[in-house]
Image (tube, rainbow, N blue to C red; front, side):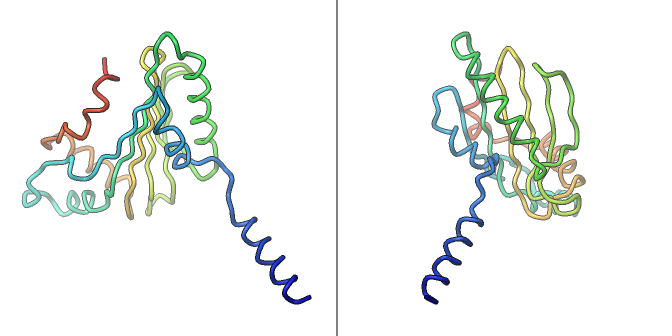
Length: 177
């Protein structure tokens, strides 16, 4: 009798701990191998910069950056319906309360949003979602440790002055017009 009770308790705990909510991570994994998608992971090595010339804030920002995941859907004349479905999936995922929207620009067909996961002083993930009806859409996840908005601004500043390793971005060349 006790074994049955413990077994039932264990099974119920396992079932309730599984989360079937869609997440961007699950979406990336499911979509990465699909025909109209381009997926890539970008390491901090993309930023070629002399670290000895960085300020303390820039070093902190660079240290908080772990990696970046990019998933892009290339729109063409044959996949408009799939584009609409996939774009809507991302929009729905980002409406989940886990993702806090910072900013949104543009309209329903063309636009971009910036969201994050975590709290303002300890951000685990920044998400950029941009779509353009002529090209398709892209979702960029910037993953890190103890990121904050100041770190992101410093990273953007670093990217502007860095010698970017374009080799890591080659898979995206066909998407940019």
